Length: 249
Image 1 (cartoon, rainbow, N blue to C red):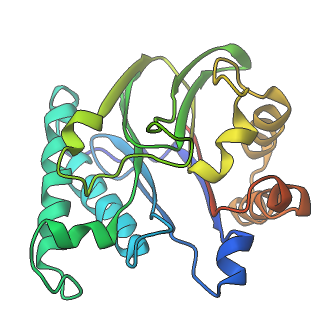
Image 2 (image 1 turned 180 degrees about the vertical axis):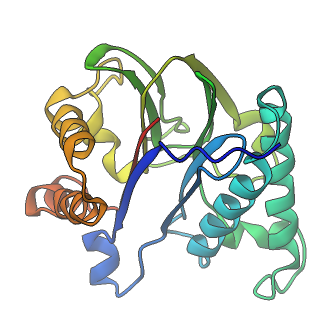
Image 3 (image 1 turned 180 degrees about the horizontal axis):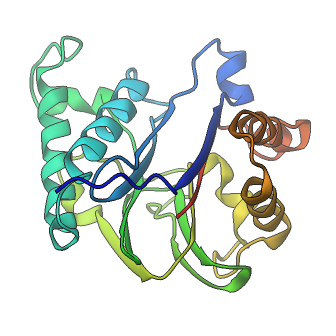
């Protein structure tokens, strides 16, 4: 049974990092969301800078997850996430730019995944690699639930849904009664959290949350969010692409 979650407000923006602009490369982040079905679903994916077709990999997994999660029952979400990622991988195996038409070839489309599904007061983050998700209730910036980044042995090394062992890196984090969601790519995690990821950087999160919550014009909110992500200070602190998706649920 379909349900239109029309009261959900979403504001999202992606900006190209200075490093990509200097190399004349496009932003390789991608986001998608839907409030038209049984569940509210949102996904952010960061195409790997080292991958030739990272943006395609990011778009493919976002589109597939939103399509397949929007109308499943909430109890099915975990299984549907795994199925959707398998479907996205199959799409990349068959993609015209994958000349080998094999699993080895999909590493050219490498991307991370951070997403959320929410229904009737319940929510769950699903996550592979870096980037982060935050669930808040009201103005309590201390009692938050977060899906934190996962890196490898080195800070610049992370995990992608295109890896053969992607299931080992897939994480789920449940929460209840949250009314605000943040999803972000890796270019913003050092703005949003303390270095140990135990605390939210309230000076970054709170002003964005309060402005977006109180601004009735979506166009104005998107422009303001773009400007925030694209300030000279933001570029200096992190040269990566930056994506932030905010949802009032």
